[in-house]
Length: 473
Image (cartoon, rainbow, N blue to C red):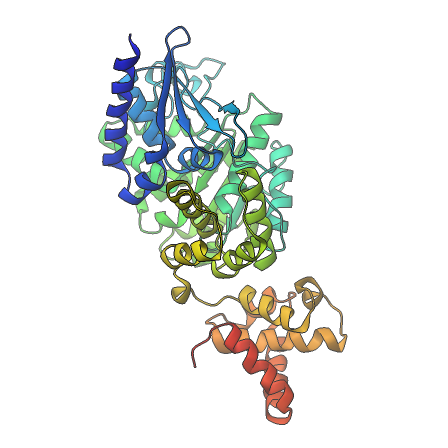
């Protein structure tokens, strides 16, 4: 087929994408995607993007939309990216994301129908067909930056990935606030397992997708096939399980799948924005199973981790960003990796469109649109970070068991501010600040209140920290 026809086909894909994503996402990402060529012999579509960041964001957030759009227009083809490396005239060939399979079957029919008929759960055969793991290929341990907020979860996750047949830490339940890197971590676990054990059937699925699949299977009278498929998975990763809190039927079905997998030594990894005991409306017997293995909390990244993440992303995309800009973004992104990515994406788009340098003038305009600074709740990590900077000590030292005066005072002050300016209970505050008990926190609060009354210099320091935290009186 002639090049003109294929280019017109890509225009049809763009229309489908425009109709199925938010307008701002289309303008920030897909507006920069251009038709490069169609290689007939290789049955391959090549698209051109100006930098690796845009490609990664599309693959991370809009891969299913891309697959369906391309399949509906081009049929079964391969897709490659042609990515301009900033600061270099050369191009790199991106990895293919649409292989010789039916992308229109994602996400509701994970296994094509002809493969489902061969499943041993249905036909009794001894071999299992391959499946699309739905893992994001860019989210690996190599791209996951370790910090105090995720060190434990990352360490256990690596152990799970490298020893999937072990019953230790099974299930693994990871929880934490939005934007702290939970989804990246579980994708890294799955990708590492696939790398070491290529025959393992690993599947990443969101709770919402699982529920939609369940509803579809029920309506079509294929609930037994649905359950049978999930019972063949070696490592099942379910994201955002809090979305099932009022979905009783979905919970009941997953309960049976969970029991089968757990009883047969299969890996189960669950992700939520809250701890198992806080999943109100979730079946108690399911909550009990969620908490029977390893429960690992991830916190928002602190200032230094945000800086490290930003520098990694900037280096990867070949950008030139002054250090004061990096520091400013890290301070204003509210400890959310998702907001960091949003700011970088907006800076990149503005720089390309307006042919301008990335400086403080540009970042100030972008941050005002991308980050809701005043609406974000204060966290214990925010307080720790500000107090430690004021006293020029590290968070690790403050959380330690050391009783040195230069560490005891910032530790007690952090507990006092956390109790006064957050809604977190004292038992939780103690756990977050060096695993202390509630009596230690109460003692610290009383001690700080006494120092404020008797020490004017200390009271001035507290006022400075409160103002730096932008706490409204």
